[in-house]
Length: 88
Image 1 (cartoon, rainbow, N blue to C red):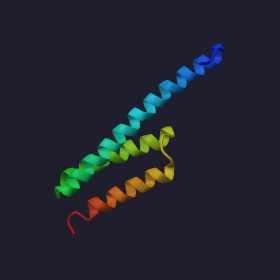
Image 2: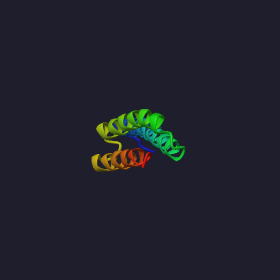
Image 3: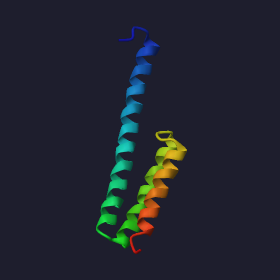
């Protein structure tokens, strides 16, 4: 464990940020799973609505630096492609 006051504070803030990032990442994954579940059920209308929320969560994670921009773009692209192919 750190002895220096600044190192103790740094460890504390790192842990707080880690927990916040973990929470946001989990929420993002939950929305992605919701969309995928609706896709399996062939429910296009609800999938579109939940997709908007999922894209918003992904964008927020990218903005906060939790995931890389390209990773976020890839996730959004794959989800949008799956939703578009429901009717096909």
